[in-house]
Length: 155
Image (cartoon, rainbow, N blue to C red; front, side):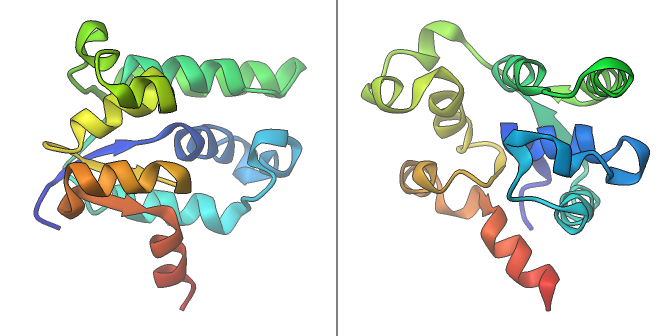
């Protein structure tokens, strides 16, 4: 992997947050994560170990904090875990003015449009299949679809 700067997209970061709690037992309790299990969490961690720098954007952090759907004590743990991760990961350069100027903003929204722009300089790790075409168009060498990772680590 030539680019050692990884941006983790929303669903995979949410999986990382919730999977980090109580050995991943709450992954199944999150409606947003119903397609994932503990092995997916482990795959995300394995990918992260291959990179020197892990990044998120403020947009991704906002989405993750809004998508935490666990309650009570476990919900508190999820938010504490998110807070810790948000403070540890580096922040990718975003610019709200740039991130909403292209036509892709109308189609994908600000979070995904920022990833399209950031694909020039960062590896984008995502499970968002509908986002793959514009990401590959931006820079095919910097796109890491989770489907490929899952296939690789499942063998």
